[in-house]
Amino acid sequence: MKQWHLEHVEKTIKKYITGLSETASIWEKRQHKKYGTIANCCKQVDYDLKHGVTIEDVFLVLQKIKSDETFASVLQNEYSTQRFSELEKYVYTLKDIKKE
Image (cartoon, rainbow, N blue to C red; front, side, top):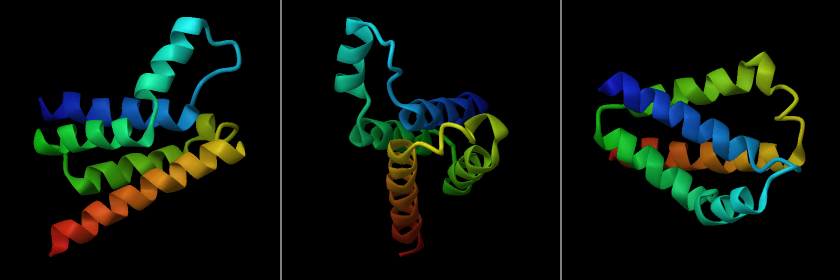
């Protein structure tokens, strides 16, 4: 079950960083407005952390995305890098809370 949650973290982070495509339908735009926020992404990561994924695993996913060739073009976008840094900041705060 931990493997499923680890894959879920990866999919959630990738979806959040990628954002909404320019050719999105009305339904996709509505769903993105409802579920495509940093708060929802953090909530999903917290859910997976409760079910066996460690903070180190989340760090590895972030490093994998940062160094992945397929995300090189996505991370060139200003908004994508901003979303990535917000998510990275959130994970760092989780690590600090865990230490205390």
